[in-house]
Image 1 (tube, rainbow, N blue to C red):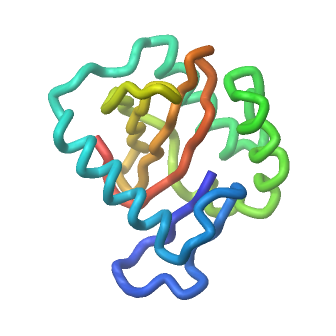
Image 2: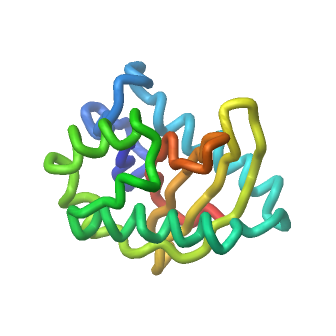
Image 3: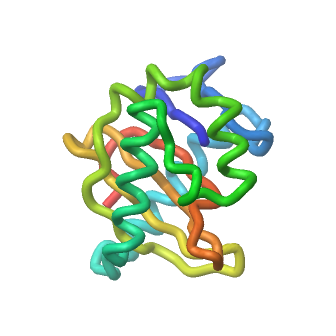
Length: 145
């Protein structure tokens, strides 16, 4: 999980890494842009199923309430959330509940979704693995759908 703070300027120390991937400065901002391009290309694509929309809403509200539903997460994602939630809860708490979820791509590692948050100030980019579990997630500023 990663929180990308607002602003377009240089991110010297502004990216908060919440997993062991993406150690290069600017990596997450680049990922946000790449996912935004994919989402724009699929803006008329399918909405997430009601079951996945529920899982996404539980995921975001669980982060906000500091009580994630670990059953919705892959083991590695659950471990990352347990490890980092106490540090980054204040950022998640300000972002708002999940609203709209749209599928933007299917891949070998799972399906990718963009999940907007109420108010449009932030969105999540989420990968769901073949077992239907949230396997990766990172937050970016602005609307994603």
